[in-house]
Length: 180
Image (cartoon, rainbow, N blue to C red):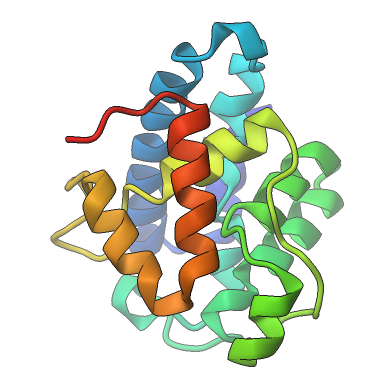
């Protein structure tokens, strides 16, 4: 399975470069996190592949900053990614795409998000690791390579309420991340 070939199938050239760079950074961070917890036996090969594909659903959303002027609401990229990866015969990778943002049904309802009213929370070690790694990077041009600190991530999550911050803190502790 070649994640780059699959991404190329779904993105135009400008957006492809941004998604690949973002995904490579998330993959690198995810592998660093996985090495903190060998006792949890994370599947490193799967992490490499799924981290590269976690945002594939962005191709179906409106994301003008990265070269996609029209499409569904950006938050739908979780569900769109799941659908794409299921169609590509990658059901386990599809779950990473669907759950990487990590939001509960209760939060979706409270914030009236335009997605299915259900939990989109990572459940496996690999899903948690990729979701955690993704928090440290943005896809905004000019900020792609800047790794956020734990405190910057926490501050960014506060706009979604206390639950995402608590979940993030729990994952930081579980995966032994050091505060910078």
